[in-house]
Length: 466
Image (cartoon, rainbow, N blue to C red; front, side, top):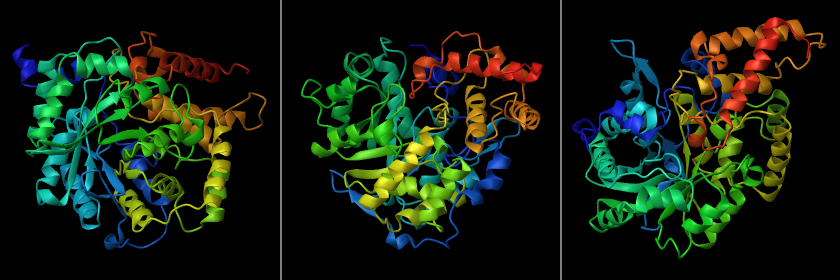
């Protein structure tokens, strides 16, 4: 392997992975530019005072760890500009967020080599290193995901593994995951045939890994195989996507969370939850859905319903939230300090809410940025998220016969040019190369969606009737 690959330079590192890391500071509570999202942060949370961190709800892992039910997802750290004008993690704000989280009972921090342009582990490590090591649990991942059938070398994988220790400034990792496992073939290509699973099991025996698991984005057949005797690994935990919409109504090729959780729970395997807000979509809801939620709990935030749902099942070890802003951290602390589990009536109510949400044809983009960087520079998440925002806000120009069509048309086009300000990054520059689609954990047919949106935008610009 070339020296620069051994040195794990971030540019080469991300290129080898074939998927960009998260570059946006858009949060789980809403999307858009930093200034707008920060300004609106308080509007999306509840109106209560500071939570009592001593009341944090904890769950016990297989090895006896008392893990906070609220886990900190380090995929969407706040960003700032360096002296060269480049986006970099805002270390001062990250330190402040982690300090506050630890002081209020949060002790599980989930990162990965690919997050935040490959800088999440470093930023997280700097902030956590300022605290006693026995006060928190670190989760990170072997992020060698790629296309099915793409072999991953043992040398590259071991370099990635060891680099995580360096970036996180630690000599052991509490919860280590095989990242984004889609099924049997991906597992064989990335971890089995190159001997990495044997390597990791030996690292666990040596104490450098305390618990070993995997995160899942795939189909039911692959999930079942990974839990079967054929795979043969005694997993300590598994990370799955779960929220009150995906519980029964997972989109595309994703598996309903009710099945995923049920299979783990009957095997006594703790579940770590990702996407409890569907990448922010369950907090940026249409007004009539917000009104429905507020009618049942006027003081609680819209997001609190999703987090209560995530935390209620007893087999959930922790629910991850990418809390970019202090307002979001404080609101989630209220939900879990302590958790008030949902009743059967509450669950039935949320199923009714899910049915309302499903009537709105948003694109299931979770703003994970795994599709980036686009080889042609297209801002894929920015395009999809602006479209979703207009659908959710009811400002989509649906018909040229609508009496408000001219205003909605103008607002959509202005908003689009603001959301994706560089013309070369707009949907019209998608070539249909399909480089992005294999990396989308939501199985979105990205080129087709971009082409559909581009045609819609061009019709608006030309004033064509539809």
